[in-house]
Amino acid sequence: MTNQPSRRLAAIMAADIVGYSKMMAEDEDRTLAKLRSFRTDLLERAVSDNAGTIIKNMGDGWLTEFNSIVGAVNCATEIQKRLSEADDLEIRIGIHVGDIIHEDDDIFGDGVNIASRLQQLAAPGAVLVSGDVHKMIDRKTETEFEDLGVQKLKNITVETAVYGWAPSVTTDKPLLTSEPVAKLSQGLPTVFVEELRASGNREDASDLAEEIRYELLLLLSKRTGIKVVSERGEQNPPKYVLGGRCRVSGERSRVDMTLETGGGETIWTERFESDAETQDEFAETVAQHVSVAFRAHTTTLDGADIAMRPDAELSTEELLSKAAFHNLRWTREGIEIGQASLEAAIAKSPDNATAHSMLAISHASPLFIGHGRIVDIDRDRALELADRGVSLSRNSDVVFFCRASCRLWFKKDYQGALSDIDRALKVNPGFQEALVVRGLVETFSGEPEKGIARLIDSLDMLSRGTLNPVILFAITIGQILAGNDDAALTYGREAYDSAPSIPNCGVAYAVAAAGNPELTGTDEFAAMIDRLGLDLSIVHNYPLKNQADIDLLTDRLRTAGVPG
Image 1 (cartoon, helix red, strand yellow):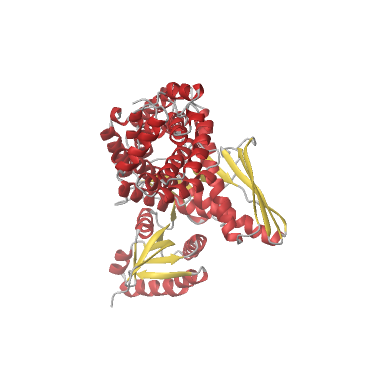
Image 2: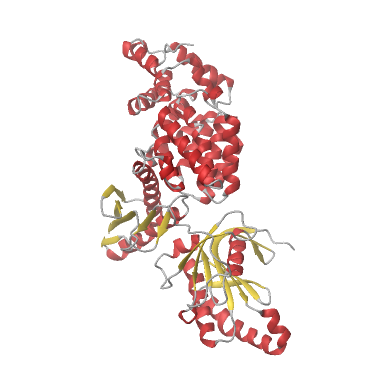
């Protein structure tokens, strides 16, 4: 009878015996005796001691599952240390963390595939782990892994950051069976997450601090475009440092978080308090907010440092940072500068997925803010760029986010956009901007109440973020479509007050104020329409599914005095 397949996240250790076939050919009995002794005296004990389970035995190799990444790493290093002392057998080990599927007493999935490829890449006696594993173990083990750069693994579509270790008695030997391709960290901004300080009820506060730090490492490790480092080195200090303090007193918890530069300059601080949620829920909430704030602040800072430097002087990663900075200024000039930098990035690195995806979504930026019209945009090229970005890296939250936006705004492909958002959130569950796109899909496709609720949640999460003008505009449109005129006017005014130079924010105010001559009949209101260049054709920018919704917005703009 076939069991129903089940899916879960786990750490997978793949191991195999080096030279097994040759050993069997030379002395089968002796080899089998060695193998039995290794399996019963070392492998099974080490796996059991670290709360693992041997899922598959291939004779000369094993697949083992662990609920704990630290357990998998400790098991692997213990085995290699013992074998190096015995000088009897050599094995190679690879470890990855990812989705696995259990079916009929076997396991499948990316977690298994990448662990197996890492094991094949490992030199005899070595342990190789993926970048995801390395980010998660941080300083939870005493093992120091060497950064071996980015490796192209056989039949794996994305390049994988690889870290290696071997026992001290074998340190003169290589860790890889081939030379590394490149260093992953080259050009990427780095962040170090400090251990949070505890006060008040120290035991509870320490538990909360550890949980928040763990959740932060999990969220940040999933983000494209940064590298989480495990120590605050003096020779190579991190660009950013996240730290904080936790206090627990009775049922009340308080967390103060701080983002600083590596040199100690404070960038951002925020306090979080709770007396209702469990510690786990509170830790997740804090980590989510901090992750979002980190993305917003570092995107601005990374680009501001190089905003005025010529593209020819910049590395690929610097070009991406410069483009992000200029695109998020929400101006015509900013979009043009950003696109030029992205074209330069693609010319420099033709296989850079993020560059293709960012250039794709930059073509949609005029629609987000209303500076252009959809008929003037090369939509086919934008969609090709978005598809190319996904084909180059299926393990990036950014590429799916960008393609989702292009599918929504250029094709009204609501299901395709939602599918891409699901993929982005699978890669990075803390990617709040992806939830904004989901809210836009719901609002424009005929479910405004659902979209409004999601966008209001995002507005709170992305407090003072660069996407706020887009979110406020969309909430206003949703309120109009849902028949909530009073709420629409509140959000429409906020949209315009927050970004009076963005045409879509003027549209939000105009559709909400329609029918209210005390607002629309003023010289100031007429000047706004003229200054922002508003006309009725702007409604065709918006990916509205229902003709009735298009007609409603057009009629309200006409009533507000917007010309045809």
